[in-house]
Image 1 (tube, helix red, strand yellow):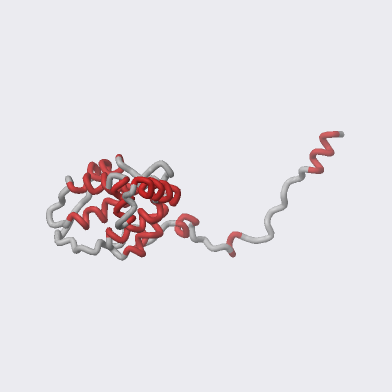
Image 2 (cartoon, one colour):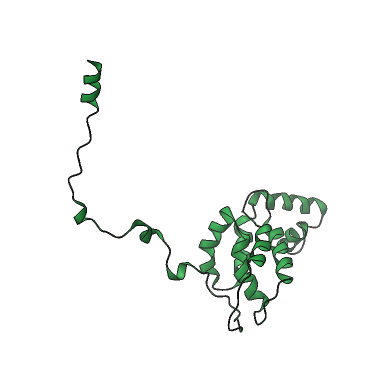
Length: 172
């Protein structure tokens, strides 16, 4: 008797009222895959004069070892300083250092910082300096600014350019 009750309550679901012949036959992965312009970052502002170049996997791996994720405990200033030091050791014939840094920079980001990069790279218009400024403004926490303001006002060093003072306090 219980089995009959269970069977009647959980009867099979009737088939949908539509036919597959009326549906779009485009595979779902074609709707979600990025195409063309979204696969590569915009070109750097400094021209690359070499007819062909390749970023070696070793170069990318070195940059990824010193990644920045945008976490509270991470400093964008320290990340940029380490990134600049690393890129200063890398050379590709016919490519200015500025262009190399522009191409390697996205590989140094993870998590929230990578999501920020995907939104900010178009606004930078190929300028790595604009991208660096945007990174620091976005990820340098306001709570840290107030701490540095208090330190400098107490120490008597609160005169001059406050951005230079804050960068100096961070060792940048």
